[in-house]
Picture 1 (spheres, rainbow, N blue to C red):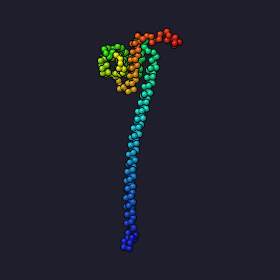
Picture 2: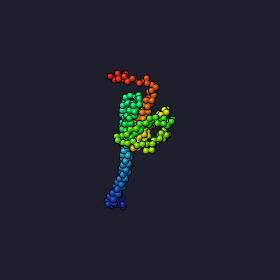
Picture 3: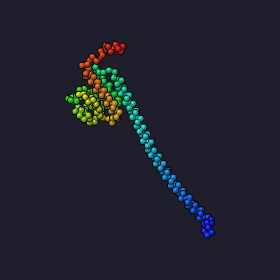
Picture 4: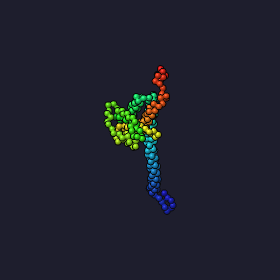
Length: 223
């Protein structure tokens, strides 16, 4: 290649320069490509993390919805099963037995105790216990003061009613076992509140007998 009359460039030199230029261009393109590839890899990793997080949240949401549905069904079953308010001690004992079995169905423990305490005198008004199958209810020294003041008993789970304007309070003492879930706690809380309400109705019916139908009239209605 002749640029001027006095300056010549050999063919090999031109080829070498062009190859070097192409190598530089190729390196720059490759570096740019790697940079973009790493960028997209980072975005893919970030999206994967977000996807896993969203899937986890959806799973938790479905579990929560399922737990809420179970809770609603259990509460509906609970109140639908209470066909009548207690009119005497036997009726109230039957209610205690029925709801104690409900608690044992919700929580996998050997025994459960219901105790109604006068919060002013700290005296036990009523107590009922139920065991699962052939399980033995061991003698427990459960302090009323500890229940009322701290709402705790060593080695047991305690759930109390949440009404604040009564002189009595219902407590459910559950044998130590697995940790109670939020759903189990809410279900047992509902049962405890229902029992307290039934006790108030039972205790006051002696002064309000006019609100209860006579058994003969009830039989006529059913027939």
